[in-house]
Length: 308
Length: 151
Image 1 (cartoon, rainbow over the protein chains, first blue to last red):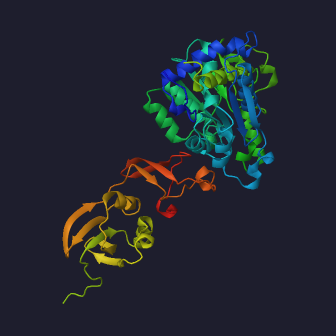
Image 2 (cartoon, rainbow over the protein chains, first blue to last red; image 1 turned 135 degrees about the horizontal axis):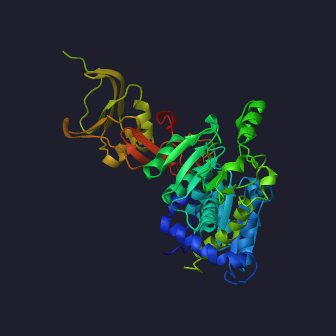
Image 3 (cartoon, rainbow over the protein chains, first blue to last red; image 1 turned 30 degrees about the vertical axis):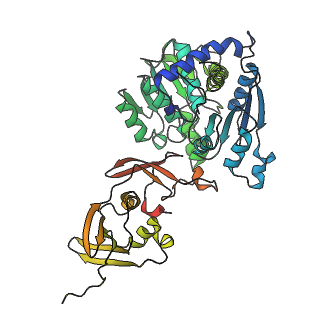
């Protein structure tokens, strides 16, 4: 398996075996990510971190990943301080950045921006989110979390909860879970249901899909993946309150769940998970956040060809 | 005597069975007006044929190749291409939807990178030819009304 020089644009660019390989490399990175071990693996390499849009976790974890492996980071978190302000195209910004670095990590508000950047750059492009498009490293860290917490991904039952209509992060995750033969339950308000194409695609991949609008009967679920229901999706703020309230996870929700059921959330959360859930053994979302570092370390080391 | 609204051509290409009202779009997609400023191109719109109304385009002294003409399959899937030599039809073929559609259709997604001023052409991957289904290579959205997004 050779990852050297490869772009990471969409989870669909990777086979199941390739995904598993990334997860295995990520596991080896955990002690370095925790700073229990030191590494100079990427000494002398430079990562350009081009964030055209705000981000906390993706940007910080990528930068931490590069630095934990002994590499250097250049870049910006606010395009306002760059020539983009003067009207420079993304294509030119990419061509400029690549002449200073070995790998580019980018987040951009336009869909397809990372795919386009990959056409202009010789160095690998890692997509840190392109608008409502893809966010493959989030998908990989979600898979890594399930794999690590549960020992395997295959055969588990996962519920995806919240806004399943907008944002293809959750669509990519559904695809990736289907690739691993995971049965899924899609729970969302009727107006925010998983698009039919995604449901069909998963079914065609041979997994069982259940579509529901209420957060009930989750006793057989292994992983409850919660996403944020955004206020701006609802014209009426009262309607939003009502809907958001009915999908809130609290101690009461957890009464009849499996002992080892885990709750995941890509964060930031607003009201979806009550803070008193944080102290329960079900709460895996902060471990999930940490997992962004070893997964991104693995990707950087793989696309730079330092790890095979 | 039957009145001929459009004269037969000696040499060139006749594109027949274009859906009524689409002849100008066909010419635009083919880009022939810019390419052949000297060539005579005749257009007939809303011609009544055996299967109802249709448009016809006749291009003199230019034989169109399959890969050029297939681009019009997006708006004229049933068009036929007749290659004319010395007033005779020497070749007749149908158009076929290409596997990729480059630089012809604008992506309908306002948030797609191709709608910014970037030095790239739009590119669609054809997923299904009948009925036509294609997705933007960049943002992966499917345009709903292809003919209204012809560049």
